[in-house]
Amino acid sequence: MEEFPCLVHPDDMFCKQCGSTLKEIGFVKVRDELEYIPAQVKIIRYMRQACECPACKHSGKPFIQKANVPKSVLNHSLASPSSVARVMYQKYVNSVPLYRQEKDGEQIGIGLSRSTMANWIIRSSEDHLIPVVNHLRKELMKRDVIHCDETPVQVLKEEGKQPQTKSYMWLYRSGNDGKNPIILFDYQPSRNGNHAATYLKDFHGYVHSDGYSGYNKLSGITRIGCWAHLRRKFVEAIPAKKAKDAGLTSAEIGLQYCNKLFAIEDNLKDLSFEERFCKHLELEKPILEAFWCWLDSINALKGSALGKAITYAQNQKPYMENYLLDGRCSLSNNAAENAIRPFTVGRKNWLFADTPKGASASAAVYSEYSRAAEPPGSKKAGILNIA
Image (tube, rainbow, N blue to C red; front, side, top):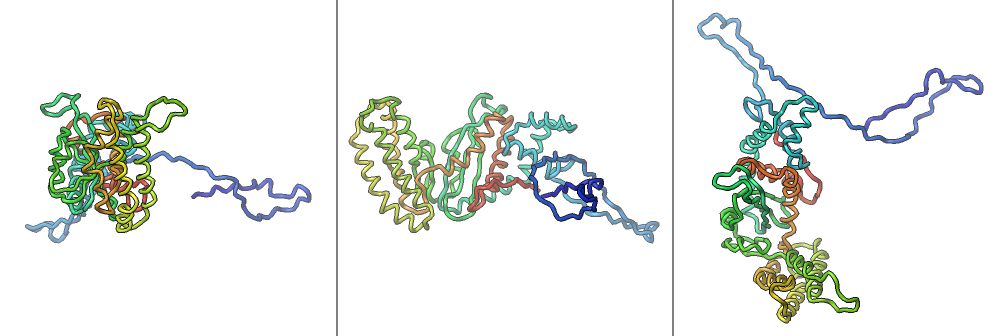
């Protein structure tokens, strides 16, 4: 907060009625304004001091002492912690592609090419972020609940693949267990479930996922289905038009069952894990039993939207009630879908990664930003700091 005093001009410091000199009686707030000050860019030149011993200078063993210099974020580069963090923040938080950052730099006299910025991201990720991500992965394996999701990403220069071939960004995050959240991205060249099986080979708890069959390759875990995905299937099956006096369609009835579960779940969010476990069995288990009985009574064309919803529910039935086993488990996999959304938003702007190294670096940066952006009990976005 900076105050801007508006002072009476010295020529006006007299009474227009009697001519006496005026005396200040105070200030009154008129308004607040938000002022924008453009960022400053400057070159910091590190100069190392060297000192010698005058007594030993002409001896056979001269002594010279040099000052310590702060370690650079990248050797033999103009990169600084703040400049690298700015490039990362612009691309991965504000979704500004490197070519647009290059143009922005040119407007203020900075000749920083997109290839240089890409190299900064890759090298900084390898040196500073990936070791942190590897440590967090070990910590994630110690948790009891994990949410998983995956989404396509295009990598142009990948050995043995066409540029238009889909690669995938996988996401693994901790559940609602009351501890610091861990959110990790992992780039892989395909959607093969073996990638998830390898990543989670040391995990033996509850795994939330959607209905993708690739997660069937996981072993030693308890898989939990997603009711949000099932609800979406029933929403898609509701007819666009129907008679005014017509009763509820089967799709609408299925949706009502799902909505009842989510309404109860919303009322339980502030309870302890033990209390949620008991309330799940008391309030939601009877609805689940009624839902499966109702589902068995429905006959629908297999190719129809309703048929697809019913088939999805029946195929996922072994996993859909497993959330009842622990109060830390959730009714849906929305935690993973929300966590992966920043990546999907950014992908719409920067479109693709040039190389697998670039895609892996992106995974590391998104992992680091997600960790900063979701502190316990807060939805306030954090600031990336690699210093």
